[in-house]
Length: 232
Image (cartoon, rainbow, N blue to C red; front, side, top):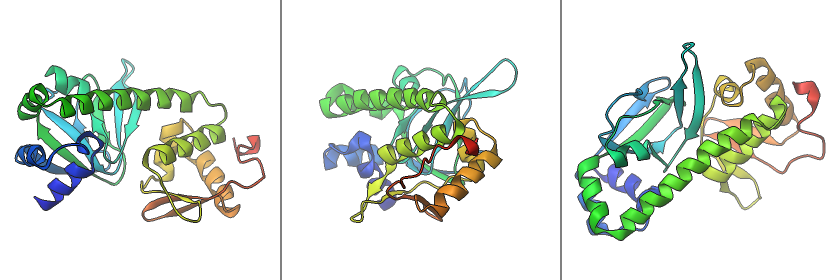
């Protein structure tokens, strides 16, 4: 349970919670692991828990009548997902799927969580903040997809990931502890994998970005135009 306690404390939702309340929630929390492509839930499933991403990334997908899926948003470490359905004790309106190779999720039973919100204003305020963050993340997806060329969309995606999950180091570089394949990057910006590979290869050669087993490292951007049209 030590991992559960640490991950609950690290989540944005519970950073201001007292130790007593955290211990109450810990008793009703499970740490679940998923592999890339595995469903956390499917549209229509009953929302019976609050879900907090501990590691990795998940994607929210809306199934279309054609059988295709529209990507609504991406969520990562310390963020709460499916929060509106959990608050309403309703059904999930969209699918949720593991995007990275491994995802860990804290699942807190909804009933005791909702009981605490009725008696503790700190938790109620935290849930309101989580709802706002959720809305901002969904808007960010729209901004990325409307940014212009593929390389411009890819640049905006990295800026977005750095803002949400990045850790700035003393040398002014930013570590993004999220592992994404070139295929996943292409999916996130609506591009062909080959185009993403060309862009990433060029940017790595110019020293702007580095890929490793833990994710990405973003350095100061070079003076050349990173969003050059020839990449697209």
